[in-house]
Image (cartoon, rainbow over all chains, first blue to last red; front, side):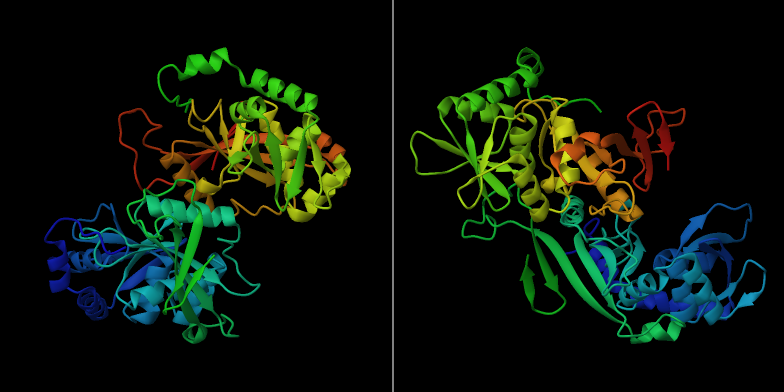
Length: 258
Length: 258
């Protein structure tokens, strides 16, 4: 399943204006303005001047929120977005709820205390962002994230992403039941997305500091419904409604049929 | 959300031919012929003469399967269907894989060993069947069952059913994550079904024999997505795609908004 561009010029527009360049411009701008994000519950608020607001919108970080200030546009960043700007791009400082600047380690510990699965989610988020996917919340589809090839104004999201951790310590208990796998792949099919499971391997590392996650590795697996009739000789057969076979493909060439 | 009848005469047809009467006719017929079901892995095979085959089809028990025998139609019954005919309707005897007749207690123990959640699933299945709902597998929608008001030829299934058990001993780990709730309610909305969660209360009973489940009670809760805009004054507002609120309604008048 390839990208579904919105309108005929969108692909050309995206090609001319790569996401890596937009994010680089945003990073430079935030560094230059010594930007500070204000921690507020489970999000971070960031005030941006007009030009920076355009960059945040183009790079798809945060959601613009209404505020009374004329010259400033406020953005509400999710925890992973804020941490990505703070830790991976090193272009945002975080001010805690006590109005004091937090260092990265303090911010990390606070994120973990507010969201137990934060280290895994952040690894998944940053893994995709570093490959220049635009990553947004997947809650409307009952998944952790959705991933877009470029700006959502130009293209529909291509992947519905679930973050999973191997071993007994998994705090994101999805896809443990076949009925959940069936439900998720059926929904993904209906909204024309591919289910992408990011399996976070901790490789014996803890999550004491952000540097731990540098040693995590990520297995990428796509999961889709499989139709035995479609996969035989006659490719014109209409998809059977009763089919619930599932195919898992991993990041390399291997394929498991389950 | 009411029933979606297939065609304009379907509702009248269903009214004239109530499911309770069809099931009663099937029960009488199976008792008269001293029917035997052959246990085969996780299903039970039942051979039916022409008239009985019509009744099994009308009552929606099992799936007809191809076989070489001319005068007999074979049906493949699911575990819950077979146990319902055997235990609740007392109209089917079960022959084990060793070709010997099994009593109800032996059949129960074997079902439990093949499917750990069988007691809970059976309670859910029989709870709905006894209220004259037609209950079939929900695997195509990633749920445990689907429930039809009458025969699937006349009406679309109205409820997508998940069986849940209160307390620590739950072996059906669905709806533990918000993302799973979002995924399931979103899919149910898309296929025009209401999510019905049957919560099985064991009331301190075990599952040593089928008589234990007589003391289980069932809470029925429907869960649906909730749209704050739709629920305000203006009822013409188009449903927001970003909405993920969920409403749980229980069997009585209470309503929880979560």
